[in-house]
Image (cartoon, rainbow, N blue to C red; front, side):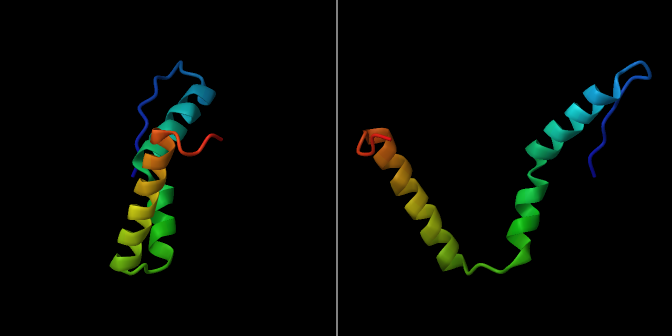
Length: 65
């Protein structure tokens, strides 16, 4: 549960902005999407490896996009 401490004189827009930022940092939506369907550990590990390879190729300059 996310709790936002707001002062009485604080604008509702600022409080909403704080809530959205805290919601994003908590990664609630990412967890919800991950729990919708089961992913085998081997598939999860393979996708992490492929992402790491892709990041390394970008860092080394193989992809110029």
